[in-house]
Length: 432
Image (spheres, one colour):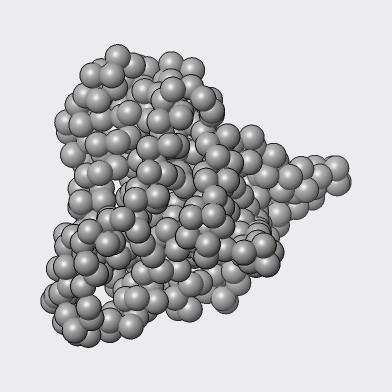
């Protein structure tokens, strides 16, 4: 009865226009309260405890820094120069700006390591440019939100770090290497529907008339930004700093570029940059913390465990079980953030992976691909929340476009399941 009320309350609040984070938190808190009607009022302490626990996860320390990196790279002009260089390479025409947005988001994956931070950096430049070229704002937000999801596959990746903590048999370097090829494939897959939709619906009518930047001048201007992933990934590869420390290095590198090289950031600009990063971080972390209450209510109400036992005892084959797991995670990913999904389901799914002798690094890539899908799958869709906020559109307006992006990335997920070497070849080549 209470599980039914939990989902009914959440859906009702969503339909009433309650913000997603608030709907998750209120529904979870109501379920916890109903479960403690027997007079054990102290059980209600689980609400503030899990609200705090949602923020008290060490990997989350990197998120404010990653968001700050995105703000700095946006204000410093790095993202704009990368966009100009990409436009100089691919040229102008219908569908080219969406292609550039996806390509730049993939490149910034080697800097920010966070989908929302990438959505903020790329969206701040590309959404306005796409609007000027005649692309609908909802389409622009969909492209940026989907493109930013590649960031948790292309190292550095917070999702891989969390998985490595939960699964000792999977090392961070191996996971980083394993995510590279699927991340690139995901970006290439997103380009296909983005360009096709733009040309089919005759978007970007003004793009062809816009000037094309000169190649060598744009390459020179973008060289400092192009060096950022080399510094970040090279430093981690050399063991100079951890991924969280790499975010701090990226912050200071971005400030150096903006304040010394390009001189587009002054001391007076620091407060607006910090305020913008703080606001975006607060939105993201608030949703994460409220989702923690919802996730706790799922666990305490015994919803997850019976579902897991039913899957194990279903009598289906190996790929049938894997298909059911993916379907289950797709459904859950519509309501929970990636960190909560990992914390709840990885301990439950690990015995299944070990039973079927699945490679734990490959399994981590599969789960992370699913989390990447969840980052732009309504109603939670953290990346879409950021890009829609920049584009000033409601998330509901993006559904007609984002479903094509979801289908494209889902095909990459199927390919990695069918051909595990897409994820395992590079780690083996590097000796991980």
